[in-house]
Each structure stands twice: as C-alpha cells, then as structure tokens.
Image (cartoon, rainbow, N blue to C red):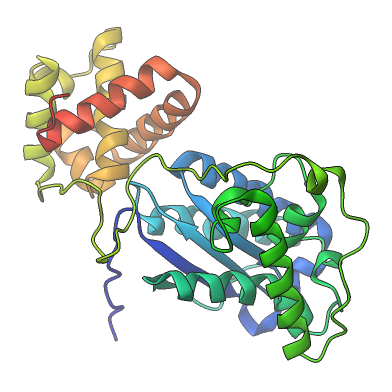
Length: 323
C-alpha cells in the first residue's frame, strides 16, 4: 500500500517520535545517544528548528519542534538515515534500524503544546526509568533545570508556555512537572540542587521569533511558493541572477557560476521542493554532482553570512518579495 503524503506547514509545530525496530534499546548505550544528539544539534542549526521539548528513551525518542522554510521530512530523513548508517556500519549490521518513518503530529493549539511538553519531559518517569525527570540525562527538562550550556532545547520558547516572565514561567513549569509526577504516582518533591541560573534577576522571556509561525487562526505566516518544474525554477533563478541557463548547465568552473549553482541547487532542494533527479536533468549534471553541490551549498550557508544573505534574497525574489 502506498505511503500517504505528509502535509508540511512552514512555521508549524510538530510532535515527532519514532521507535527502533523490535524495540532494540539502542539509546541505552550513552555513546549512541550522544551520537544521535550531535546529529540532532546539527539538523537544528541547519534547518532552523525551534525545540520546545525532547527526550531519548532506551528504544525511542520524542521531540516537539517548530519548523522553518525547510520541510521537516528532509531533517528527519537525514537524522534517522545518517544515524542508521553509522550504527549499522559500526555493528556490521544490515536491515532497517527504525520501526518506520518518523511520526509527526501537528500541534495547533497552545494547550496541546503545553501537554506535549510535559508528556515528553515526564516520559522517563512514566517509563519507570527515574522518579525525578531531572535524573534522566538525555532530555530537555534536565537542560532547563540544570542550566546546561549550549542546550538542544530553546529554553525561553519552552517556558513561554508557562508564563511571560522568566521566574514565574520556571515556577509554573516545575509546578506542572510536579503535578504530572503525582498523576503518575511518583513522589512529587521539589527538584533539588537548582543551579545559580534559577536565582538571577527576573526578565521577560525572549523567544526565537525569526521566521514563519502559525497564527491564532492556524494559518502559516510563511510565504506561498508556486509549484515550479525544475526547468522553470532554474530559468527564474537565472533571470534574477542575470545568467544564462546554458552557462549554468555547462562545465564551466568560473567562480560566479559555481556559486550560482550552489545558490540554486541548495535553495531548490531546501525550500522549493525540487528533487535531486529533476535538478540534475535540468542542469545536465549527474545526481551525485547535484548532491555534492547541495552539500557544499549547505556548508557555505551555515558558515558564510554573506552567502546566506544572498541565498535569502534570491528566495525572496523568487517569491516576488523584492525587499
């Protein structure tokens, strides 16, 4: 039976989860858990995710994230695929590591997001692994309570579900966690050993408000992108960049053409639903060459601010926003 299409909403919030096949306790090995976390950290930066909550259990994971312009399917295909490759290679193992594709449930209401955050961070308690969620190492809750530097979780975005001021939001969040522990039959004493960060002067929470989001009516504030064939997409890009399609499709290694190909391929793959196969055909390149161009383009977008600015400008001009 064919798989159903996933509907992606730019700026949407999703509860994403998946399990290892046969319930293998892969994340019970801390080295494997850390490997997955570093891949997650990279994808979060690459694709601009906001992380509201996360946890790794021994045989599955949960995430609550907000997407940006890049469909979450690309991020999770990379995350699960790259982890599987490394795990299987290291174990000389073959076959599927994950039980299925990832599962993604849209979160369209604030109350639902509140419940998902608590559900995810209380998962180790519900699973009987710990009595206090702070004692579970691989989770966003521990990052919040311990004030971990360079966390996966976006702390302010998470706490905004519980208040506008940092101090009040922390108290309300911990109170909700304690109530959740009571509901699960766990001892609901206070978290102990709170770090210095919990006693700093109060401030307004500062969420990550760059990029699109879902408004109160459930509409994405992200731009609408026309459906274009690969030929149309490349032609529009060439016109904006004042280049000829024939030059882009040539073997020329002139620097302006090399950089233009990186803009076009990376933008097409990340934001305009262009497939590697179709871009390769339109540019008269092999699929491997297009994959290489995209990989280099992603690196440059992350490392070169000038490149990223021009990448964003090309995207706006394709949409019809000439700011």
